[in-house]
Amino acid sequence: MSDRYAYFIGCTTPFRVSNYDLSTRRVMEKLGIELVDMNDAGCCGLYYEVINELTYLSMAARILSMAEDEKLDLMVICNGCNGSLFRANRKLKENPELKDEVNQVLADIDREFKGTIEVKHYVKVLWEDVGMERIREEVSNPLDVKVAVHYGCHLLRPSEEMRFDNPQEPVSLDELVEATGASSIDYLEKSLCCGGYVLAANQDIAYKMTGRKLRNVKNAKADVMITACPFCNVMYDTNQKSIERELREEFRIPVLHYPQLLGLSMGYSPREVGLEQNRVRVDPGIFG
Amino acid sequence: MDIRKELQEDIDGETLNYCFSCGICTGGCPSAMMTDSRYNPRKILHRAVIEGKLEDDIWLCTNCYTCQERCPTKTKVADLISLMRRVYVKHNKIPRFIKPLVENLAACGFTQVIGDLENRRRERMGLPKMKHTREIRRIMEKTGGLYE
Ligand code: SF4
Ligand code: SF4
Image (cartoon, rainbow over all chains, first blue to last red):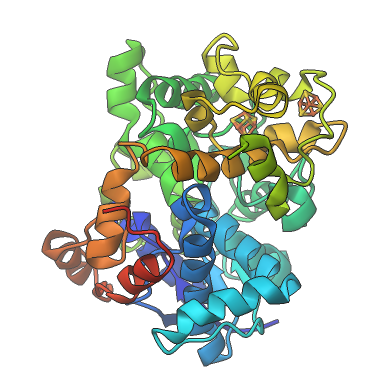
């Protein structure tokens, strides 16, 4: 297991939910994992996957090369970044011609993709590298709360490439939630997408999709919902009020970034994990 | 140029002809579910393979990969729709809802302009400031991805 990672936070987190960054740093520090900042890294290239492949791969390879320079694996906290960077890394490692083409582009900014590191979502780091036992050791303030877990898409799929957890019946994030003392409850259509990816193209479809999951979570009587991706979080938390208005329906589901939940169970105060910044008010009293 | 040929020539186009139109992909598709199947990945594939046509509905895919996981013929449905979008962009203008992202990337290297407001908030939280980069603009220029 590695205890140092190049730490890439992407665009959505610093723009909308810096409390996700904050709480991630807290829990990693507690677990003795050092995160090396990449503050001028910019974007992973995700959107270019559907616009222009060479631009996409070059943007992703640029980020990968920055971690390679540090001789560190890359830890990401966004499912979108995970999909984009994990798959670009794989594609370029497997395809020397594409790699050459991309390196010709990168030469212009004095960078080179070598293919020497791995990309890891932090859920993977926690579950596979740190391990449940080590995490439980740090839980000093067990929580008593019912949690609806949302995995999101690009942590698990396409499973043929991601090869993480069981793609049909994943357990990693549920187990990570239960390590905090909380219980992970079952609910309908747990694998349903947040809809965030089509928000700009068609708000109506996106909001219906997000609302459908919020409804299922509410019906299952969850106290809170947790996400492991900033964009899923923006859909369920930041946009929850406008979705309620649009669908004329009340949800009032507090939505936490997973590291906020873990952080609380490690004894951090609500403020130390940035809980006051969540849009749907979270009453710290509910954690027991 | 023939759209079919263009799709097939891409490394991601390999599985284009695997589909036998069973409809399982549409059955599990969230965008289909939200639109009473007006959005329909089976039809999108059929239209591309048989008629060689791409229409605007390809932009309604959430890229969730549910279809690709379930397809009995291992057609890479979601990857094919991403490929169709790239081919669409080659032949049409870049969709209006993507334009701001491209402009932000060219201006600062992020898809959203992370400015003083965000950085002040980060500073108050004890988090490092985010720095803009011109390198991404260079990459966009060099790869024909600027779309100005
Ligand atoms: S892509 Fe696969 S699941 Fe969809 S209609 Fe074709 S064969 Fe069936
Ligand atoms: S990836 Fe696109 S087409 Fe496939 S199930 Fe998801 S929304 Fe539907």
